[in-house]
Length: 176
Image (cartoon, rainbow, N blue to C red):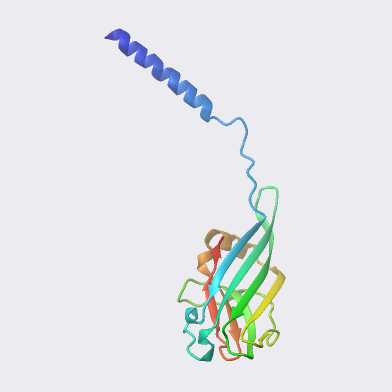
């Protein structure tokens, strides 16, 4: 009986020693953090607060936001810029956009603009009820970039029109 206990104890010590040796890294991890992030949203007039119910209610759209970040030697973000690719369709012919922005708020809530695409009022007119536009090299504040990466669903993108100045189509951003 004592021989079996001694053998079991020795096997346990050998197993622990080999497990400890195999789990100890020999060098720190060198996994690099991404230099860009992509966020998307489906844009719907029904997502606006209040929901759009007039002639522009049938429109839809998508946005893809690609955010490039610069990092320092400690991997902290020191700068960020974004490119916005927006596709809209199903709106009445002649719909005129007046702005496009990112806001920080969850579904059903509203908040002020935190990233402005720089879209000027009247710059995009949906001649056949459709339009695609891109805005590039838009500065994003470092704290906003960090917060987007951590919890993009707390941010929404929307476009505004002359008919719906408070917003014509909106969607919560999702990190891809």
